[in-house]
Structure formats: structure tokens, C-alpha cells
Amino acid sequence: MGESETHMRLVASLVDWVAHTYCADEADSILVDSPSTRAGSRPPIIAGFVPDVYVAAPPGPLLVVGEAKTACDIDRRHTREQLAAFLNWCTWKEGSILILAVPWRYVRCAEGVLRDLKKRNTVGVTRTLVLDRLEG
Image (cartoon, rainbow, N blue to C red; front, side):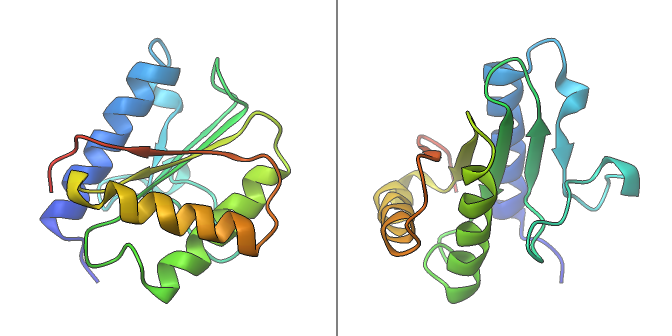
């Protein structure tokens, strides 16, 4: 299934934000799941899911897992399972962060989904962040 234009824009915004915030001098350490990315440069599979963005051992946290979701995908079962897997993965990596990029109108919804997943899955102290001010 091809990615929507909105999803591709959100992934690009997520990559830009992660590069600027965590990898200013090491942008090539950002692994991105996109049709144009060659096989060796894609993020790893985490519990059956591939995140949109993955950075291991940047200068900041030890691990950055990033996911972009369109308005139609934020509160779907697949998304909840995917985010739960990523949260669980991050729990075992101290200093990790899960970053979610959504259209700005859906930031609160996304924050609620993450809050609910953390509560239901008794996830440890995994940091999460929902990027706001993104178009889509």
C-alpha cells in the first residue's frame, strides 16, 4: 500500500525535527522507512512493526523512535498495537523517546492515545512527545 501525501509530509517533518533536535551533525544516522530508502538504511522491525524514523545512540537520548500518523490513523487498532510495541521497546532503552508526528488538529487525540497506552500497558518511564504545529 502506498503512503499518502499527508503521511509523507509528516514523516519529512519528523525527520527534520529529529535531525535538528538530536542529530545536527549526524543526519545520516537517521534511519527512515520510505520507498526511496535502500534496504540497509531502514529502521529495524520492532515486534512486527517498522517505525517511520529510528535513531540509535544520537548525542541526546540513547534511542529515538518516531512515527507519523494521519488524522485517519491516529486512533486505529493497528496504530495502538504499533505504538504499544514501540513504547515497550523504548522501556528497555534508558533515555529513549517515542515521538509522534500528527496534524496539529489531532495533537490532543494523539496525546490521549499515548497516555492510555502507557496506563494500560504499564510502560515504564518512556518519554513521549507529540509534535505540534505540523500541517496535514
